[in-house]
Image (tube, rainbow, N blue to C red; front, top):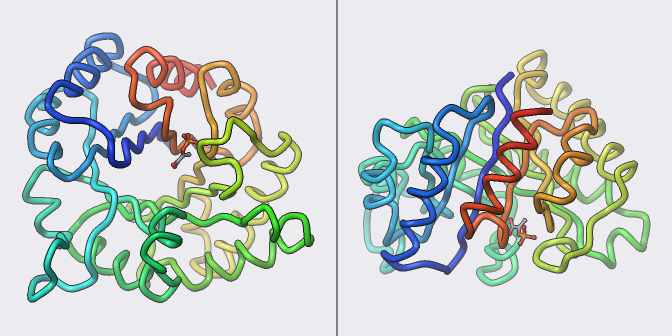
Length: 247
Ligand code: PEP
């Protein structure tokens, strides 16, 4: 399985930031892993244009579950694909918190994405209170069961395990804690989709940076990373791409 370094720019970046994507592809013309950036929707088409003929893939950060209609401000999966996206992040904890997205809504969006030929990157993760209460596996198991699309395969689904308390905080779980969750996810996914589970990329996300990437990528069942802050600069994200390529 080819591993995946995915960057989530969140609500950051205007046209000038495309220089970072250009610098990334110049420094990493043929990485051994897949390389994806998910900029704000306003930059998807221009980044896809800049990435044409390079190893960089481009994704969205959300899509609507419906193909079209009266949904002001929303984007459909077909619109993302039309703009040049190959992937879409769904159910990020910031969407679950800021927009009260439920597992059922995330699943519906993932099904819409997969129907349009996009790879759905479904995010799950526990809060700090849930971890402290010993509920981590119960919470992520429930989110996994409820959020993955019908017809999920290794080709159309990526799971990102992102502890909410590790996102943007500089804090990470221990390597053993990440390993425990990722093996649990692999087993749980086998129960849901059978042998195809072995090919589904399980990303870790939450304060990944060049300095901790190699040790995280050495953990069994960690098949890449979803990176927020460190994906904004080509040098930082490139360091993570290099670590994953060497893993
Ligand atoms: C994220 O938002 O998906 C994320 C992991 O952010 P950061 O890398 O900044 O913690």
